[in-house]
Length: 186
Image 1: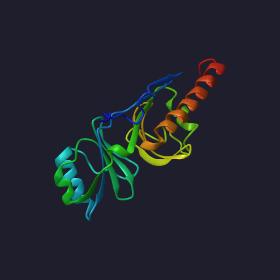
Image 2: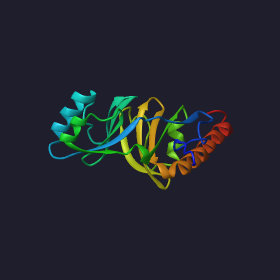
Image 3: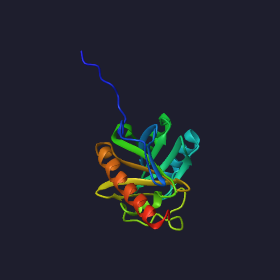
Image 4: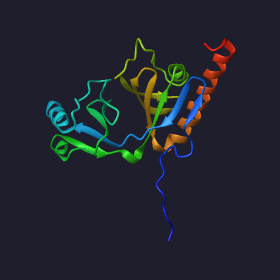
């Protein structure tokens, strides 16, 4: 009988550190899509009671490492970390997405410059602050990007695109590092 071994989406591909940026795989815990069945306020109250997290406003995230709730589209949020309390099912469609996504963390002084090569959105500090999140294109794939700290971003892509994500991020990291070398470390 064959023995199956569970592997993470970026197994063997990460971590990578190039120049002033580092890309690592993130253990995001359980990923659960939440969609209100009616009143989003009732779901927000249940989420607060069960997990201490507020329902996120559009383009925002609530919580911190280990327990976050990301805006994930109109009338949708992604609960990252905890297993959802069963009480949430009274107010929302609760769908486990854990095996469908690859989660990585990009951090370092070069993080914004790396993402600027891949994302059609301005992610500089004065525009995209800690707790901001969005769904966008990352090069040619759909992604969710959340700013979790100074020069720190959580990036989610479909699991099937994990290898492509790492390749594209590595290429951008190399280009940013090469430019910094040419400019004398800028």
